[in-house]
Image (cartoon, rainbow, N blue to C red; front, side, top):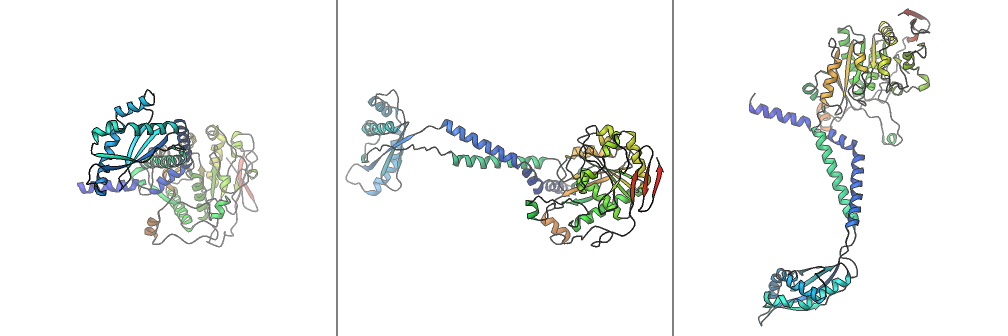
Length: 513
């Protein structure tokens, strides 16, 4: 490989790591923390400034500077004044003058500071004396005016200083206590600093930021990219917290999202048929990567292909399918209680509303989920589902939280990993890939989920700003609803160790385990 090719490849890798959305996402994620820290440091600044604040009073007097002799004019006086400023400051801070002033005022030291400045484009020199009290500032200024000639005659023999304004008595501190301007600056600078640090960490974080990074970073193939779908369709809905579940049954779903899910379903179906697989495990590395939503919509898309599908909520630590399908907790038969043996398995399988998709769900949380999924009753339920359905999809917990997936991976025929944009580290993703693909290469691939796409990239890919279509409803024909074919109902035997049954509208058949 030539140096130019290596350089070009390095540039491409660098460009791949720069993703404004990912950086802004991380900054927004920690926005509350940044604001809290900035406010805290701003308040500490207020306390520090208040604690260290020391009042200083300033007394001023003004001199007219002119040169000795008959050739004085305004130009020479201006030049003389400019030269005088530095010399006079040396005089004011000389140990001889300060010692003389201290002796005159019967003090052991010079309790203040003195400076001189020239008023621009004039021959006026202003003396500023600062001290801890108005009286002391005035007295020091007065004493300096009485004694400066002791030193000035030797340094400024050709210069004459005439008093234009006598020392003034200050009425208020020269350094007023005004911490709020400083606090605002500290707040802004601190917030900006923390945002910059978050941006740097985000840039260095080894995650998957774009679909093209899957091939170079992840040890499995990309099945489909699922782009972000808005949960709030309008500002009014956001203000009223009326969030729509990202579900194919929702008529407000975008055309692109529905098509992407249908493409994913076709790819999964083809691979599973090639492998003679019936059961599919869906998982992710971390929580909130959208695995349950992907599992639900994948199941719905497979049902649309006239497949008999059952979706099992195997995430007993954080059940969510009942929320996604908008089912009341009272309507749900607790899958965990059936596994525990506390209730019978009768009517465990229910149908999703407005769909022929069958569901096994629960709402209760079980800390001992790994033990429950290892019980023989779960194996029997799984075997029954394999016999009576074309596809059995199991939604499992995040792999970073519990060992449930390791327990289930040997029970299923195929696995699917959901990877959310810029969430899990590449190392953790590849560790999950190794687990899911450990037995007979069960891993079908990964779904790159909840991807935000830039405006320029969208326009380049599609030739316009985005899709403008929508579905009237999700059914056998777009915009027309569901097919009118017979619906299937599924019942569980009165005891889980006796038998399961399936029925259509008019009859029910039982089959033995």
